[in-house]
Length: 108
Image (cartoon, rainbow, N blue to C red; front, top):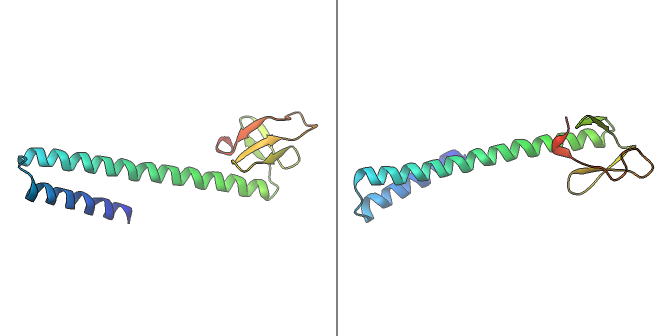
């Protein structure tokens, strides 16, 4: 849906350029191309962030289910690490990983 909305916006901008400016056709196409590139980049960035967020949520769900995660060569589980509000795992007291911080994005 975002794709359609983005291209409608580019079309409307192109129409506004067509009727309300004295730019040449090639200049209008360049402006429309830049807007298209900008909107396409924003859409791709949003898709990337969405996939990363889904990955982090899956990692957190596995942690809450009691499964052992593998992060940066370290086994992360509920007995050795706490989950913070910032989606990081912090090593518990009296464990070999005391106060070690591991981001959930780094886990599999």
